[in-house]
Picture 1 (cartoon, one colour):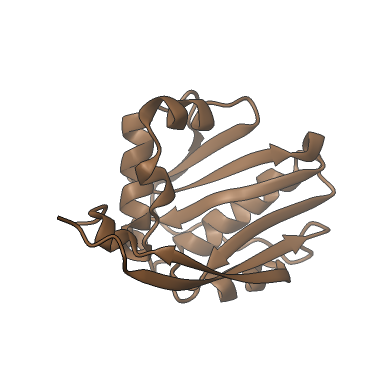
Picture 2 (tube, helix red, strand yellow; picture 1 turned 30 degrees about the vertical axis):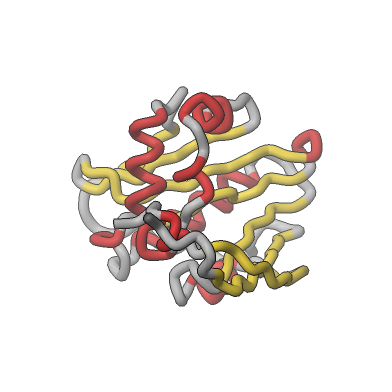
Length: 182
């Protein structure tokens, strides 16, 4: 029986951009790569990406989401999922959500599969996500991260041009104690 009483204090940092980055995008890493829009992604493929990218950082919310609700969320008209492939292998993804009648684009999820971290794919994929978001004509682009994410996540977002606009602390049930992680 899982212990559901353990709790974790989580500090969530909200970031935004109110103008496209003025810096030159990083060059693509060497080797064959592609970033593709996943049209009508399947729940099983999405769960593979979400669970693999988020396992080390305790991404848990969508692990609890029933398949029909998750399918509706990832196939919604205002949501797009882009997958990075390196030599034909999924290496990471980002999910954009158009909010506030298109005035705000949220980078809802972003990350790499662990084997691809530290090879230059992250900066390239993040800048691609940001450029894609700005191509849609919003007033601002937002993202949030927390102290459970990769230790460099906040720095990486700030280096890309995001600025902190809010922060909050939440206490959550420890997802490891809920039996969501092996």
